[in-house]
Image (cartoon, rainbow, N blue to C red; front, side, top):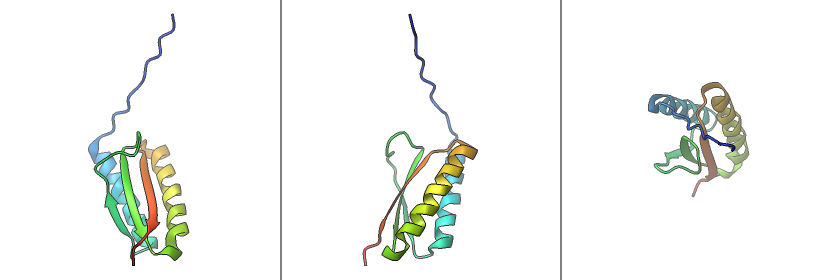
Length: 90
C-alpha cells in the first residue's frame, strides 16, 4: 500500500504582506506611473495575486522585473506571488 501525503505550506500573513510591499516598491521604482491592485482572490495556489497596469511601452520591462522578483521571493522567502501585467487604459 502506498500513501501519498500532501504537505500544505503555512505562510504568515506578515511575510506575504512584506513580500507584496517589496515587489510593489520595485515595480513603482522602474515604472512610477504603474497602477497596482491587490486581488482578494487567489489565481491558483499562489499566496497573493497582483494586477499591474502600465503604459504599453513599459509592459515588457515591468513583466521581466516582475518575473525575476517573484522567482527571487519564492526561492528566498517561500512566498508565491502571481503578477499579471496589462496595458493601462488611457
